[in-house]
Length: 111
Image (tube, rainbow, N blue to C red; front, side):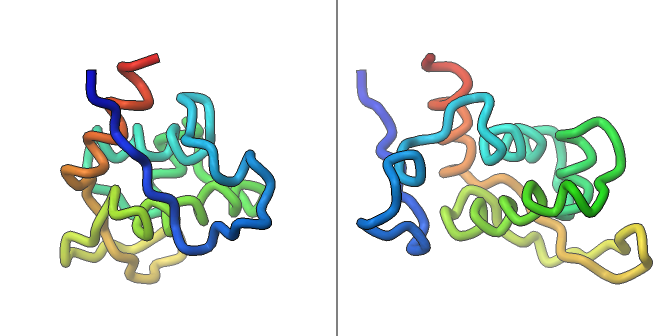
């Protein structure tokens, strides 16, 4: 069986601990966030709300930042649409990509 090779974002350095370069498991923040994008096209804030089951707070900022990691990996991409966030500011809407669907399958279906 062929396994997907995960290409990590440029932010990962050789000197980073092994936990920074291991592929995500289904309980990791990035995998849980990716799972939200399989349901709908979302803004970062919406994806966090879907993932957590409640509106994000300041304490959830780290999870929202994982959306930029998903974009860097090419697992989600902007749709060209924007929507207002909870403070009324327009935010980009992203959709899962083919690479993101492949990564999602690898993480959630091939344990």
